[in-house]
Image 1 (cartoon, rainbow, N blue to C red):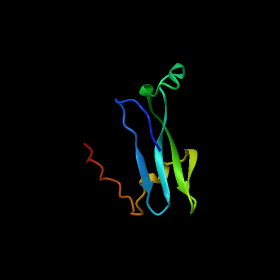
Image 2: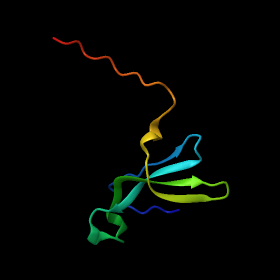
Image 3: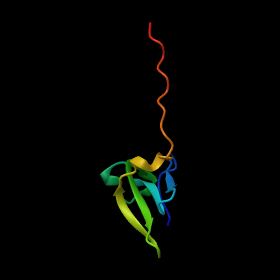
Length: 84
């Protein structure tokens, strides 16, 4: 797989531990009239994925990546600053 996008941007591509899945930024042009001109492509705040089906990687468009950062550890809210 080759990803083409502008040199000014970065693209995230992360494996999901224990899920046989790779989640990545969806790349799109910054304007509709720039479609096909990959120097103007970048992440658009949506995500795609590749899911392993046991034989090959299957592309999935527009996936929910909310739980990507969960580590299974309980979350502890930071202490609040003392009030006046």
